[in-house]
Structures are given as C-alpha cells and as structure tokens.
Image 1 (cartoon, rainbow, N blue to C red):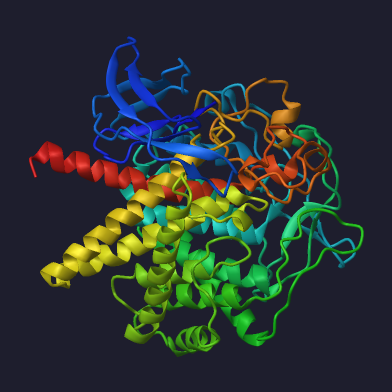
Image 2 (cartoon, rainbow, N blue to C red):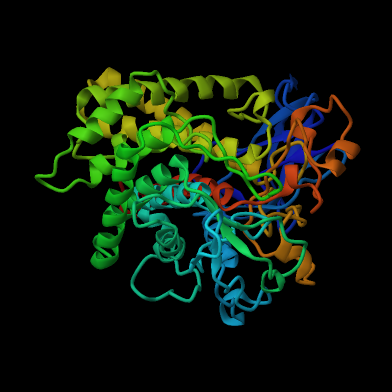
Length: 567
C-alpha cells in the first residue's frame, strides 16, 4: 500500500495537483492541524507498464490554501507530507545549483559557505600531459564531475550549457543569493558558479586550439576526502568531442558574460574561435577511448557530428557584426542534411543545445530554413512525448527502455525539450489567428502539465517512494555514490544532489545481486552508495533538473505577478 506524492509540494494556483495510490476508494487531504480540507475518490485503475502494478490516480487540484498536507485513505494509510504554496520549488532549485559549489576542486570549502561539509584545498599539484613525458599542465580548479574526483570537458560543457540557457530564458528563477564566496558581487550566483568551471576549462585548451579530453588520475580514487587523493593527475589526449563542446560552451558563455565582465567574455570568445579553427583543420572525427589500464570516466562517443553542430550554432550567434558567418552556416546545413536528431541535451548527444541556440535567438540569425528544421523536430518530439505520458499513471514522458544508467537525466532532459517547445509556441502565438492561438495555448498547457509530472516523479511521486534529491522530502534518498559524503563522517549528505535513479539494466555488483531479473524498470533502484549504476550523482544531472525547475518557477512567478497586478 502506498500513496505517492511530490514530497516538496505543489503550486497553489496549479490545478494539476496529482498523486498516485496503490488502492482504490476514498481519500482525504488533511492539513497540519489534522483538519480535512478535501475528500475525493481515486480514479480508475491503471495497469502501469513502468512499475508493473495496478495503480489509481488522485486529483486534488481544487485545493489552493497554502500549508503543509498529507493524503490519507480509508484504512488510515498516509502519504509523505508536502506543501501547497507559492514558488514551492525555490528551495530545491537553489539547493541543486548550490550543490555544484560542493564539487569545487582546487580550493578549500570553508564552514561559512559549506556548513559542516568542509574540506581542505584538493588536487593542487601540477598535472602531467599523457603521452608527453614529464611535460606538465597547471589546471587547478573546476568541478569534480561526479562521485569521483575527475574533471571532464564534455560533461562540464553540458552542465554550463544547461545552466546558462536556463538563466537566459528564466533569469527571474535565479534571483536569490546562494551563499557562495562570490555572493553579493552584483552578478547572479549561477553565473558566479559557472565561471568557476569556465576558468578551469580555459586551462585545458592548447595553443593550437585543441582541448584535452579530461583531467583525471589513472585510476579512480578510493573513498577518501578529496585532499587525501594524492595520485598524479593526467591531461588525456585531445578529442574533437572535447574541442567542439568547448568551442560551443565558450561561444555561448562569451555572449552571456558580455554585460557582466567584458574582458572575461573576450577571453572566451577568442578561445572559441581558436577551437573552431582547430575543428576546421581536423574535419574528421578525433574520438576518445581510455588508454589501456585506465578506468576513469571515458565519456567516449561514436560520432562528433552533434558536437560540431552545437559549436557551429553557437559560433554563428556569437559572430560580431561584419564577421564572415558562411563557415558556420555551411556546417549547420551540412550536418542537418544528414537527418541528425536535434532533441537531446545529454553529454552523448548535445544536438539539442544547437536547437536551443537557434530557436531562442530573437534575431533569427540562422534564417528561416534552418530554424524550421529545428522547430519541426522539437515540436514533433514534444507531441510524441506528451502522447507517451498518457500511457502510464505517473504522466511520465518515459518508456520502459528509457530507465537506463542516469534515467533521471532522461526525465529532466525531456522536460527541457518540452520547455523549448513551450517557448516556441509562446513566441509565435501573438501572430496566430484566434483558432490557431487557442490550439497553441492548449498545447502549451499540455506541455507544462507533462513537465510538472517529470518533476513530481523526481521529487517522490514514483513507485520507489524516494525523492531523488537529497535533503528534499520525507523520504529523500540519503546514500549517493559520492566519495565526499562517504568519507566525511557526516550522516546526512549535503542537500540538492540528484540521483541517477532507477536503471532497468543495473551495472554494479550490488544492484545485480539485489535486484531480481525481470524487475519492472521503475523499481530497479537501491539507495546504497555502492550502487554507482543507480545512485551516483553528476553535475549534469543536477543542471538538467535546474533547467526544468527554472521553467516551473518562472511560470509560478508569472502567475503570481499577474494575480497581484489584477490581470
């Protein structure tokens, strides 16, 4: 028996407050004083393909009074507590951004910013360039990528890309100070945090524009604090994957920081141009595989077409007046002509970032033909995902095979796609006929409803009963595969880390042993730090979720503004 809810809460003005129960019958909603404020019946039974159970939807959207609540059934079973109120995602949103501060490498984390999660400066020694004898590289800084202490260009670029586009589209969702060392410098803290990674990325570029693929030890460290990891670090060989992602990220960041720190923006613009020149001189893929014997994250790929597409899109938008754009346009046209999908936002496939670049460019620099290719793919995929969401009781834009390693990024990346589709229609609706506008508004509402369902799932409305964000929810997961939380001697992990989530094909020894073969995919989860294939965290799983909560916060703040102004 279970009653599954978003354990953080629901917006007061949102009519789509939904839960999922494992039993039919009557339910009540009680406030903190134990008073019943709503009664209702569970909906029709649904045999859910993602968890293999028969479940019952609950809809209590009519309740709008702010407060803390529980759902109960006739047998006295209770849900976890949750809030109804205004801007309910502010806390978890900010915590997911602040979590990146705890991954900073090359500096001490002080108590006044980190609370109990302090540690001394780590990985301060000069690194060695693999394959070049004793040649060294000063590359301190950046974020530890995941549960290990490596730093990697491709996931770093993706993380910064998620965050910068979220800030570009929804700046009102990043107004709070995060209590990091730079807070109060009149720059949004999300930009302050991204800069810490960008400064490190710049150190990874060679003089010819090539970019080292990653900076890691030869083997993953044991579960020790970062300052206790004294293994030699290596800058691994240049890949076109890293060069193109670096180029794209620097071109994007140059635009975003131009009004914040022009000198820094110029540095990144120059770095992007240098890497573009490297890409032009190396038109064939230069892929990456780990040298024999090294087991740190590979972040390999079978193609660099999507990375080059993103780089071309960002370089096109970053080009200054009078600059020749023909090379960027030609690259976009050539790659798009292959039929490449442009709807994903992960490290393996970054083509969705090219869609974000082109479709959120108010100048429409790419031109009508290229924009229409991106637009058509995004809207078709958004409609496919909304249809998919009707096939399970949780409203998930997921199918069974989507529960892979890092499935929670699939969840949130699909939220990003739907948010981009929402933005496309928002910009077009003013030029539509009344009937077209009515249809577009209905599609936008549906997209937002599915986006909300993805976050509801992440925060506890799922068959495991866990909120997949540390520190948020009565049953937030507590044992991420993260060396610092395993070694720091503190029972509770720092708040704000997104778990990788259920994995229908678990890949670590404990998960394989403990999860029976044939278990439905949404149930394939254990809150154990040993389970790296289920419960690791990464910077880019967080940033993807931040984008989605930024969208939802922006919609909630817009509703609040309209109500307060009497509109």
